[in-house]
Length: 134
Image (tube, rainbow, N blue to C red; front, side, top):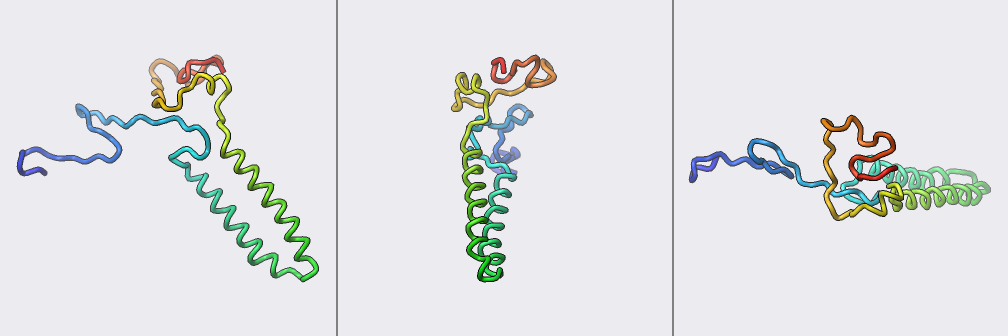
């Protein structure tokens, strides 16, 4: 409570209290898997990949008999490398439809969806957020 002005002071992180209605800041559209904020599944997948590769190459393969080590390093290394490349490619591409990519301005805030007008975002192959036929 602010004693100087006699009014209450409220702090709301990432939101503005406007006429008793909570107004959130505009959300920017995500361009690819590297756009912030990251989804927690993304963090989990990278942690699992690092953990499995560390355990495989640091613990499991060194415990194999000497004759099998080199084959295991080559086969497992190829599989992990292939997975890493595919994971990076999947994170870097824009998953939006080609028509949306041509018309979308990613620097603009994401439009809000009004459920009182439409039941679903995409109806009859028309996206009500992007205003394009998909």
